[in-house]
Image 1 (spheres, rainbow, N blue to C red):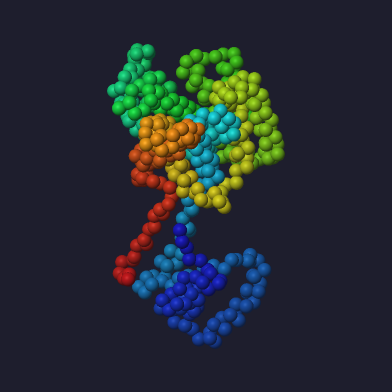
Image 2: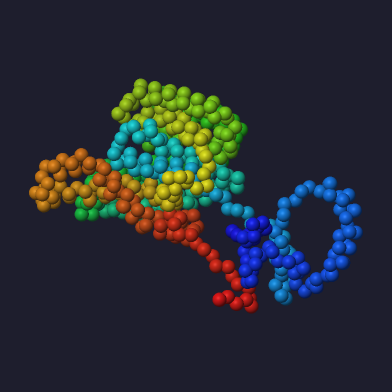
Length: 476
């Protein structure tokens, strides 16, 4: 949005004669007004001098205002004055690029973990806790509007990408040997409704065929098992109006209540089956979700930083103790739900406490600006399709060992080097396939958000609007 303001340097917009716009002589301030003789103007100034001397002391200093632009010939002066007196349109809220960067790094960490299966990655960066905290912050900001409409809007933005994923993946599984009723009977088929609204865990087989045998038999299980995140997200969205009200009334007890739930279900009251998994996942990440409430409300800023960081570090040390006593090093942090919940909560608290609220990525991080924008605009698509991209990358790399000319040329050296770097090659090849999924399926996120579908929304192309000419004006 551009506005013409007073420019004391004389570098403002110029008129046709090359003069600065604000340098228009005073006697030409209004069209059709004749200049007055100098002696008339001097007389009026002298008659006003005593009154001005009496009132100047009570007037607050004012900033120099922009000169009024002369109205066009045939246009009333009052219309031009009204146009300039109209208030400026409010600026659109600027995205916090620090939070966008955290979301992009979280997605990168998810793909890294599912490719290399490094057990220590969740300790370095608890990506799921970060993603739930960011979503909770956005939810709290949205709940300044009526709750029912906010919940419906969040569900609307999540479900269409899920439906597109389901109608692509599920028919392939059904055509190649998957029978949801084989183990659960009618209940197994009824659980397919979780692909429509995932209040529960969608079913998936341990083995299923694929056209031409291109993918491993576990492809469908790997594709569907990531939907636990969608299920947990749905429950947190639905319960957010209640959780936010409780958090604002009793912040600390409400924040700690999910940890108590996890401790009870892990130590004393184990819930079997997928219901137990649903309760555990909800408890592990509900605290991070509500920490997003605190970030949005500014609660974290009211706590001294040294105190918050000290408490978070102490809690993380306790989580590390629980982890080593339970699952132990070499095992994923997910295998110790209470340790995972406390560790994620402490790490997210520190990340949000030091939130610098960038309007743009600073310094060398600016190189990644477009990829960060793309990741945030296609976060659901990347998460839903990345496991299938990994499976496809594995299928594309497998035949390398069958190329006899490579083996004849390089022998065991190539085979050994390729074996040692096998997972790295899978990771590299996964990203072009993820980008292909973005191009093929990402448009569903735009439709869900009621936007015009975009092929590659990385912010690289900015739309420019040509101002409309007034009737009767002639452009060149």
